[in-house]
Image 1 (cartoon, chains in turn red, yellow):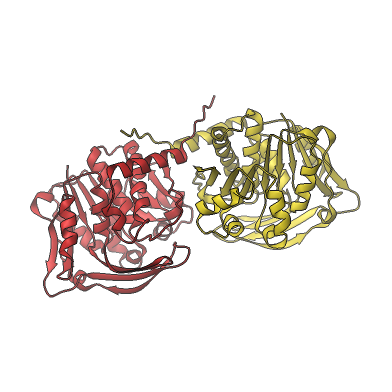
Image 2: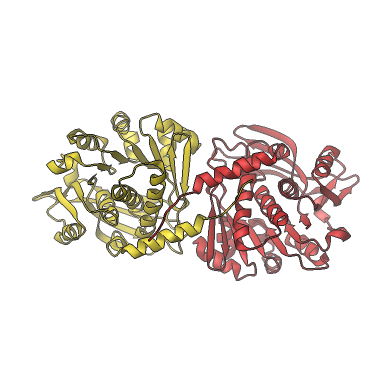
Length: 307
Length: 307
């Protein structure tokens, strides 16, 4: 199997109540790919960086069998840069700086062997770039998962709707689900959003877990109660990466297996927030992941025999 | 077995975005007792009302084997009255009126046969009244569950701490857990609160479910995603009533059985919010409860076999 990922590869400056990380490597595709690599190997990133991007990170990608044939490096230009500050509750943040740099005129090019990838992850980016990637696929992937955000709902709702109509799984957070659907109840919001195209919807609720909707079914995965959330940056992308990486590994896109994938995604996200940026993801072992998944099992497991 | 409940029995006027209920029957002990009666029979309420309290509701109690030998009816006086309005998100509310009336000088008297009750539920009330009830018990109950709120943390922290030190299970919401412990992380908050006395702590997170802490263990019960929450009043009390009612019925206070009790409590709470006040609780059938618990099982059940 093979997994194609499009999204940003970038620098972030992150301030939390616990400290500050200056110009650390981030970006949706970075988190997604590193998280997916905990499960599967044949991964390719489609993205763009400037000449300032560290060769060391590209080596880290290669060590994890993450291909960078689709990662354009633009000479004389700078990588996408974001700076933000989290408030004390860690649930809200303010953006301090956004410099698009190379992202301003990104023209994604999918390497030939990945135009027939089985799994496609459209990380958060302009819906037009997400569509350009979809358009380059020579066969319909088994599963297309898309992440997006409120910014695109406001700035290009038509283009966003067109992209959403072409994917299988949409992942957004609770506020975005309410905004996209105009419904306050997440159950009603989910029904409306699935009518826009996706057969599956994942609503991410941060520290309150995630909901997976499919037809009339709903599955809930909790977030692990953590002593401290050190840095929430990348948690949603790590979740998505773990989710699609697990599906790519197991080659099974049934609803039951998606439930498992949501648990594995939640486990990876729970590691991501333990350190700044991608630091914790770079240290992950298989044993770490299995131990963490066991914690999720213990957290929600109960045994009721109804008559 | 037998279950003693102390708490308010009162009138509420409730405004939600869906409508208004004027002077409907409410109060912590009312919700707790009606919810517990879905599981168990030998229940007694210790509380106080005025002569304005409807005989019809007392009949409803008796129909459900809820004894009112400890429910004082004060001639010439009025019942406790609360009026409040929920905001659109249903997660916050403002109090419009609080009239203590008979509650101002409530002196609880536990009927003799219930001074040796196996289960004791201290519903939200001044911690002094909760202690007066504890002091009247001739033998230590098998399990004492206590609910409280932020108001007592601010107005009588010492008396509250003294009461908390004498109970087995404390139920509070997430904001209250943070306030009581001075810790933002719920995991850290739980550890501190359990050092104050209770061996078990339940943190209620409303639409985000509930956490049961015990020693180093934590169990999470989701809230059922509902199309609409009609009226959240009494949801926490219904949860507590279902929890202790199920424990009283099953006579098993192991951690594993408490997990089940948390699920049954969550199920009862999910009914409570479907109509104004106690209306939905008055219609509950055993089949309703079993069907709802099955929905909880379906909501969180997944099957992962780790190596």
